[in-house]
Image 1 (spheres, rainbow, N blue to C red):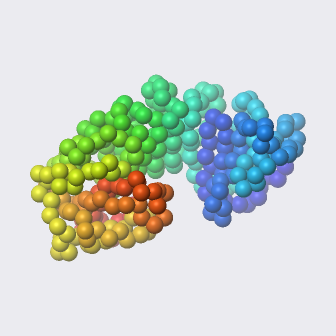
Image 2: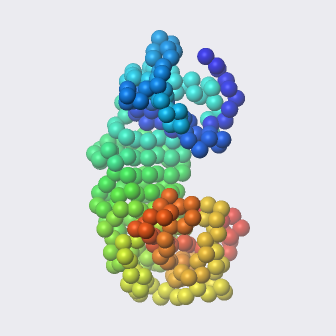
Image 3: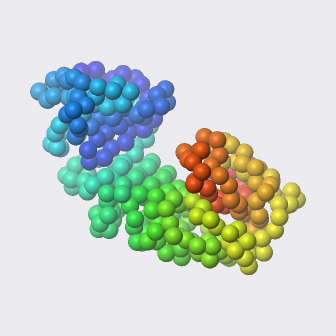
Length: 298
């Protein structure tokens, strides 16, 4: 076996069923799985006395070996660490981890995804308590409340917030919050904005799927005003892109004068939901104050 290829892997992501590697030079991650569909198998080879299979569709970049044995899983995990210079780790919790395996895996990850299949709050709590999350948490499960470690993760994406109270969402101290499915009304979002206006938080970006929000009702009682170039920059920098916020309404935070631009818009070019007519969003961008402008990046 090759011991060191000298290649840099941007991220190694692991779950109970697979390990994947992301590289800068390839858009599709390479996935090494431990479960698979035999009908898709195109060939195999024997490695250390075990069969490893690859898919017929080579664009899938998927290799699978049928085993649930912890030593073989960890052997492959450590082999990837020897073979590549791994910059960061990610984890996708699709089902509860075997405790012995979990003890051998990294406990600090850049990103953690909790899939919709993880529904038991105790199982979710076990995953949250094990990992330190440096950058982003994606929760696809329809949780009813936040684990305490979710409250201040830099970036959080909620795939299903239908059971979450808007007051709990407003109390998050995250840099960015993205919510897809929810049942929030104009009044709920109005509460969120008023809470932000009266409370100092780290929030810089809110992205919320728009189910026919009425912006006038959303902004009621917030002293919202039209864009004024003496108050803030017309553009907000997000992921290297300058977002035109001249048509947005401005809210000023009471405690420090920070300005948030709030508006409704359709998906932009390059957005995951570009071209889908039913995908429209409410956006909130919190502009940096004078001291933060030099280093502002989201």
